[in-house]
Image 1 (tube, rainbow, N blue to C red):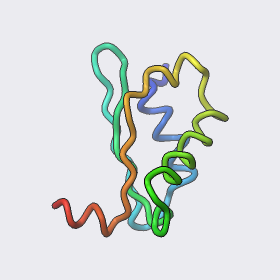
Image 2: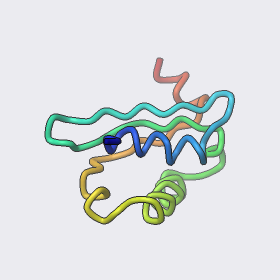
Image 3: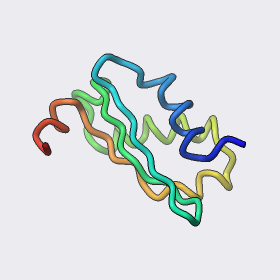
Image 4: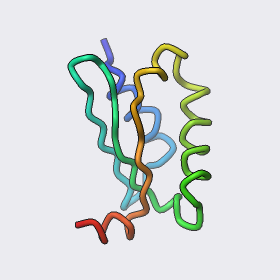
Length: 85
């Protein structure tokens, strides 16, 4: 059976699959998921617009119960990620 982090990765990779794009999700023993999406598609978008884009996809693809297990998703551009390393 597919875990929620695997399902999120599959769903979001289909939308954010570019050369410098990456997804990294972790799942807790209680089945709560958090993670980071790095994508060039976030350039010129503020954090609110980025989160709206992510949650619009998740609202269409996940069951309400599954969404309650998502703790948070950080959205970065590749350039932003590079400044944190």
